[in-house]
Image 1 (cartoon, rainbow, N blue to C red):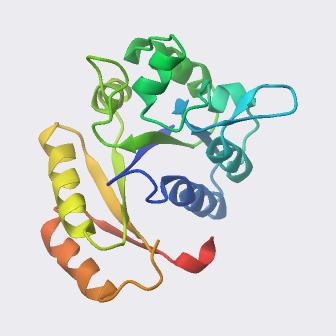
Image 2 (image 1 turned 120 degrees about the horizontal axis):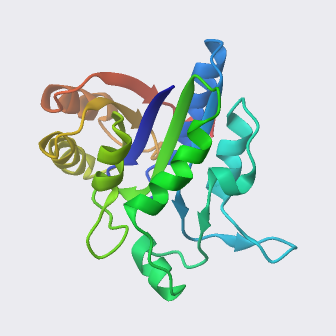
Length: 210
């Protein structure tokens, strides 16, 4: 099974939309897909008083194979804050080892592709010692970087791409997510990033698909 980890230059850059976009592309290629969002913060309570992530629901809808909600999103947290802080408020401590146990359970599925979505950016902490970097290294999968096209994204994207590669992780490619329909010089920004980021450009995700 080919696995990709989806990270972003920041929070709210459209990682979930891009992850769903990729799942749909793989579906069109005839591939069986699953998704995994280990930690989600900013969740809401459903009628049964269960914490639910809207992002995880979108991933469940986009993938081809059938998994239970808790398999796709084992850790759903209510506070809309960084995952390690939300876990602390919930009096939980989660390690990369814990996340790997969740991942190993869904890895038994016969899917061709697994798309894993992180929370926040590349070096967001999971606990006081570990970050998403440690998790991705444990999974041993390439990373897809989502760049939210908005003012200031050149610096964020270039730094994040360099950080991923300096951490010894493969940057499979990057995607330009058009989150600001009024952004000036969009094509020039993408061209600048193509020149600066030493990884393949997988193309844009238009604003209108959402």
